[in-house]
Image (cartoon, rainbow, N blue to C red):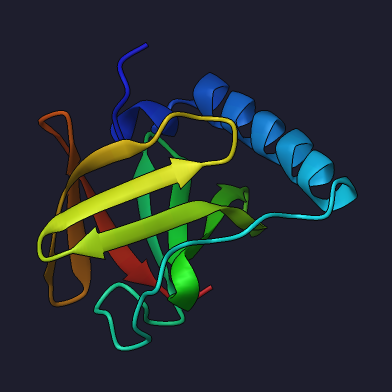
Length: 134
């Protein structure tokens, strides 16, 4: 499977990512956690307190970028958003970004924030996410 940001929008992939992430989080919590080397600044444009989401054919998912490099993964079922806190890590320098979901290889690419949206491009495959209040 191609390692791209948009590849996790497909329902079976979202389910697999969520299942692997949930299992990994349980193992991580049971084993006492780990360290996060990211030293991000709280005023980074991706850290808004809101989610960055995208929807395709009724399937919605997104990220909540947090200070300290923590990342929450969210997905929508019907009218309800489900959040997996500490689902991975992220780091950014200038226009470069690395997103690593627990149990998956790091996804390296670029990002550009413009108003209420961000375009994240991984392996030449762009994904446009809109700032969303959850």
